[in-house]
Length: 294
Image (cartoon, rainbow, N blue to C red; front, side, top):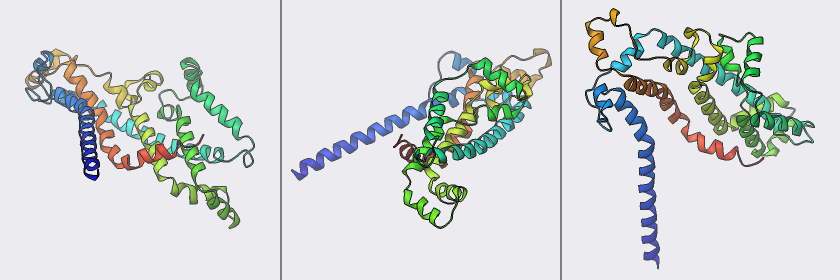
């Protein structure tokens, strides 16, 4: 009986290992394929000869993007947007989640605010009212329009609120007895204990601000104000042939919109691929602990 259970356990573990390997390959394959296409010759890509191994390796697509000085300016705008947006969202979510984690005995209007948040999460006023509001606030062609437009993600508030509600209430009661006020309890007790969920919402915020491109297309009337995601969607392989030197002509023969688009996609995902491993250990724990209570 023991040997039979041991055999079943080995088969089960082997099946799990194979399944995890397959899922890992499914996640890695699109990224690898995008990279391979971006550094392959346009003729090979157009003929469908490129899959896992690049053909006619060249970096014409990346050179075309980098040669434009606007690329670095847009990259810096995206970095600014992520830093400002993460800081503002982090602070606002904390201030909103803490009182909402209380009971109605401690915060009388808790349910009213909660229903308002849920309603705003499910329903939107529409793009035109949103644009008119941003314009009336003078946020057109301003990075603050990109940052403040979604500065309070309701889903993140719910995650942090539920995480706070799972913390032992005795800690807060002890702090109150010792004379601590709400600010000291929030930043001195709750904040240090909330690393998993705070790391999780930080990942959500970074990814959201970095990948978002549509708001800039509406709020920015000048291309030089575009963040990276909006900028790379405007880059094409169209060039002025009368202004090309011999080296540029050679590079152009290896370039197509298909390889250029692959380079855009790979560049846009690279920063997130670098950042995510540092937060991965907190991610699942933060999601799980932040979604237990309603």
